[in-house]
Length: 633
Figure (spheres, rainbow, N blue to C red):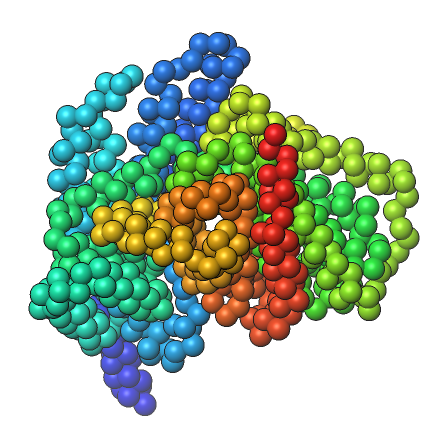
């Protein structure tokens, strides 16, 4: 028996050693992943802090000391591209790039793994094509010197090259770690086959003329998006293949267009407001605002649902990020709402609809991005966005009133006037923040980019000295999350900018303008078609890619039809919000399900009354321009 046990033990040791040998590459790649984590997350966090410091220093020097820093904007813009690329790397490593998964998630597990492998291969192909062209673009930028600091622009573009290299490494590591080699070979074969087919079809693409645009920008993009490939890489792939096989052009122009699209100083507002939104939750500002609203109406029937709508309205005016808004409000309200017997699916529906309602509330990131890509005044958009959101919010209040008639009003005594007054006093620092943000922009004291740094500084001070809830251990994760989300958003903007440039060069913009300008019904018909288009695009492509891609094409048409820019913006954003939070494809809906800790099945049927309310508000906003423009003068 002893000999037998010894033999078994020896066999086990041999098997163990064999297994360790097989797993050695995985351990090595785990180490690579850890190195990548530190060499990207630490610099990204430092870049976020530096950008906040540079912008805030510029505001203080200009308006407090009356000694403008001539180099501050240049330094901020130079570092911005590095921040975008490091953020994109982090998002790829953490699988946080925006993509549509509604179709892929319904496939059998085996096919889900295969599509994941294919997506990684497509990402790798795009990066391999971009890398040499990014190096060429960097060389051409070397002779350009910044006016104030007199440094070569190539040092800024170097951030793009470094980011592409790091993303290539991550894509390679993920392919080796997560896929079986048969799956890799099959996916690689299909990718290669598609490439060969396109190369052989060059004469046919030339004969098709602009009809070939449908093959690349509808067919290829549609297939890639449905397959769960990150949207930024879908856009880049379509543009690169079109310019290679249908309209031969030097591909370094794609890199140049991506650079212009995602490194504009105005877009630095994106990471700044994302950071501000995350700080609201961490410092307790979001909680005290919710507590005050709960003290006012929390004990009436459906009261906490009204609090949810009010909190989203208030906090949207601070953070600019819908994901940050939802993450700040839901954990505070949902436990008590569930304790009172609220259906979890109903809560998710209210959360999603309130996010769709609040898309026009300044300083919404969508407002800032529209201003950046269309040239519309940010101050005008900030002024015009309040009333459409109020109309949509009122519509949601009416639906909530009828759907909450059977709800318990809550337990315990109603708060006294003294308790409400105390909650108000505690909430004053938080209540002041949205007004400060809007005041600084509307009075021209800061730009929309700079004002977020005022909010960040204010939130830190309030969190440390007033609410005493500043958690230092969460600072690094918040900075990294800021970089990751910003990188994912801005890489889409860069890719969509290159795609829009290709469409414009092909004459699609002019063709679209000609056809849309002949729509029956004039301005009203154009608005109706725009609503349908942006609901669909908001659902399939996410809001920001749709805005960046089609905003520059459609806004000039709206102007030709004498539709006010601000009015059209509000119609577009509300339409996009409905699509973004509409099941089964809207990414925002699934985001709400995750934040609300519920299930898709529990929420999907309860969404439609709330979405219908926002749709009614959209029709009113489209039909009554005054709701968007009445306070502009």
